Length: 324
Image (cartoon, rainbow, N blue to C red):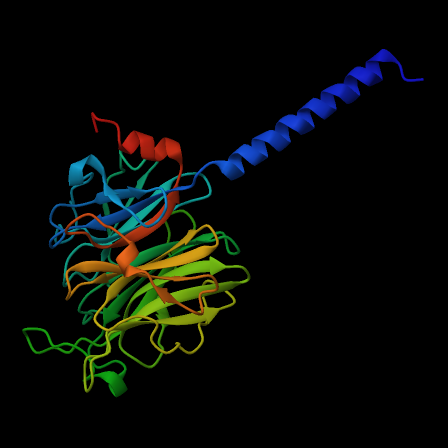
């Protein structure tokens, strides 16, 4: 026969299990919320946010006003990419100027108050490098480090595609590949290295983890002899690669700035249809077969290349407070 104390202990354990189960169920039923960091015009106005409850309808926060002004490099804030680290801190990288050989970096606990902006001269080892475009940041859980990657042109490098891209006003050819650095603490960085060369002119890489593999979406920046300017998929078993051959195109031509978001069972790939002055999207369950859903998505006017990511209700509520 059980004594009263063991009975009480069993009852308390049962209550704790019930509370845990209810809490877990409540967490599962709590609607996920999402943020989209983006820029407008040429990036002079800095960082903007839009929010969504379903990944389809996006509403500009703070009536479309900027949350952060650019202060480093050529003082643009284009292509803002944000990732939240395991300690809850948000880290952002961005393009600081059309022909800067470095990128911007800042950190925040709440997406409102930001650290001093830093300019990282990521291509200083290549004195002829023309640019550092559309940097992205990804936290690699396996290596417990941050991977920062971007597109740069080094004139004369990759001669087989030297004539495939656009030409600057000074007649220098744009022939990009993706480069990277890694860091664990944003104090010391591994040397810049080539990250992705798929044998074609490439910009605007973005990475997600899907199960045991890493999926990278890239823009084929080929313009000559036939313009491509579309998105392709490449995969790897590690975040740092090596990534395999790129897929055939998965998007329409003349799009850029891809960003992937997991919404329920689906992945949504958003992209800037920059020549058509609108945003588009495609959807997939397996990152293999895609369905165009551009007519189902709604974005703030003037929204340009950014990053979609999940965010807590607390973070989004603070961003939407009237005084902000």
